[in-house]
Amino acid sequence: KLSNLTIEGYAEKKQGESSSNVRRLSLKRALFLREIFLKNKYKSTKIYVKAMCDDINISGSKDVVIISSKLSQ
Image (tube, rainbow, N blue to C red; front, top):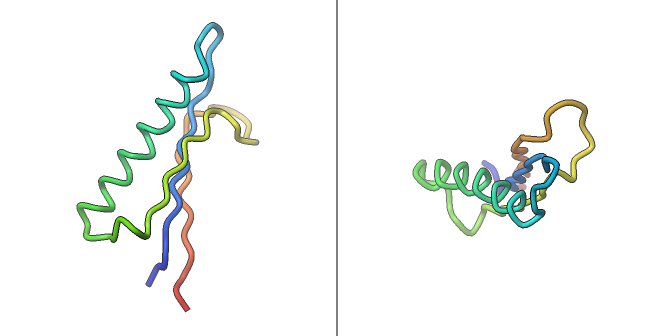
């Protein structure tokens, strides 16, 4: 069983785009996935959502969502 999930949404900032718009898009992506987990009976208190803008150290597109989890002991 999983004890919690962290959903981090990222969106690449395009030239001329405001940071707040990018962060909103990041949040929208993460919240979309949160809804899927909630519909599948995952407890809302076990889901953490983060809007990360494009602050990710990967090559290629920065438009991603990363889900990490921890196992309960």
